[in-house]
Every structure is written in C-alpha cells, then in structure tokens.
Image (cartoon, rainbow, N blue to C red; front, side):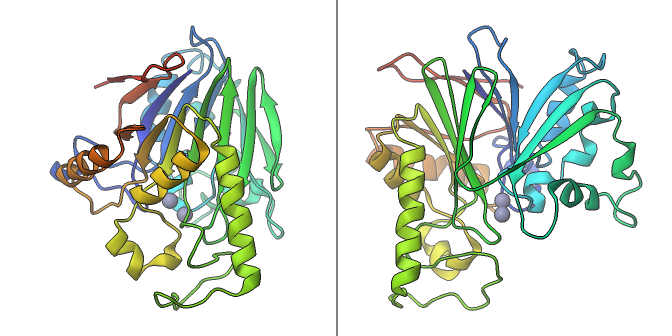
Length: 319
Ligand SMILES: [Zn+2]
Ligand SMILES: [Zn+2]
C-alpha cells in the first residue's frame, strides 16, 4: 500500500518561502492499495492539494474518461473540500467518482458539495460536472469495502463532527485521523463554542463518558495500524488557548498511537503559520522522545510505502 501526500496544511493554503519544503496546500492524501498500484484509487479529503493530484490523474485513464476513484471526506470544512472545484478529472465525461462523508441530519451530502460552487461564489455550477459522481452518506461506525480495501470509521472531537478512516488491504493498514481535539477537556459537537473551558474546569459525567467512548473508538480504529496520519495542528501552548477549535498536538497523536500499538505516526494538518524550520524542530524533538514509533511529518510529494512486518516504512519524495 502506498500513501502519497498532496496537501498537508490545516485551515487555509499558505504558499511562500517559509512553507516551500512541507508545502502550503490544504489536506489531501492519495492511497493506492495493491503491490503493483493496481488496487482501487482512493483519495482522502479534497483540500487544495487535490488540484495538482487531478493534473497528474489527467495524464492517465482519467484524461480519457475511463478512470474511477473513491473520495473519502473527513468533514466538509473548507480546508478539506476547497480543491474539488479545481479537480480536473470531475470535468471529464466518463470518469466515475464515489464520494463518502458523514450523513447530516439537515442537508444531503450532494447539496453540501453543490452549494460550494453556487453563484456568486464560483463561475461553474455543480451541474457542469461531467463525470458521474455518486454520493455515499456514512452513519456512525460505518464499515464498507472498496474492492479489496476494507474501510472502517469512527467519529472525532471536532466542531460539526469529523470522521476518521482506516483502510486495510493485503495485511497493511493506514489510519487518517483529522480533525480532532484530544478526548479529555472538552466535548465538541454540533454547535459553536464561544468560551473554552478554563484549565481544570470539571467535565460533566455525560461529556466525560462520551469523550471516553470516542477515545476508545479512535484507539480501536488505530489498533496495530502500520501508519497513523494524525491532526497535530497545535503545540501544547496553542492548544491551551484554543481547546474548542478541535485540534490536537503531536503529544496526543503519539499517546493514541502507543495505546493502539501502531507502528508509525505522521504529523499532519500543520498549522498554517508553522514554518518549515519549525516543523523540522518539532519533528526532531519528538523523535528523541519517541524511539518506539517511526515518526514522520507529512510533506507535499512525500510517498510512504508501508513496509513489511518489523521493518520501517520506505519514504521517498516526488518533486
Ligand atoms: Zn481541517
Ligand atoms: Zn475542521
């Protein structure tokens, strides 16, 4: 199984000299199952990174209108869907896409996506999409199969709820866990929280129970995983100020990965203001204290081939 990063930022794109090495595009990861890249084409999230992925896809069967891909969406905040209107393969007749995201109570998934390109926000309405796009709404704890790939999900602690995915194929597994706050200080659901709790504020028994169940779900999802891609937008100092924004720190990712017995962790959804040099420093500091896990920081162009049992994953970088 190969995992390639096309967008690694949270919140909004940040091109510029300080973000050149890790990249400034928002979340998008492509997964190719099967040893010979012959498995289903799976894309997770459609942040601005998906634009460049789309250009590359157009050089293959997607350019001829015979491609098929599956898009798993963690949630529909801008940084996870904003690249979709610029994703060339959806304007090519004959291509087929399956889009998966959490079922909402109020709006069908298709309408959520279509409204993104409504006038006056975008010149090309969703009806102009030429590819065949099927929407699959997911209920909590859904499990399904994409060819030989088994997909499972669990909910996360994030405003209006995000979902994490795990993909299993040929004895290899990768988890995608973003966006989420840790599961200890605040329960974030479907309303905007204006005032975060103060450090030490007690949780209600019901919130504490919901958070414990959510954490269990995430640990179970990541159990024994080869690779866990995790939201590490914050440093502990930043988290203290904004626990209600729904993001974690590298410490939280490592703690969950250890509890789950995962083998590798990829720091992901980097804060937009984090410079390349700061990410280098964060990664180096955490590698020192985490010799038990293969620790990486997601960068655009990075491709990870999941390694055999007991060996590290192979990492290469596409320019
Ligand atoms: Zn995000
Ligand atoms: Zn979000």
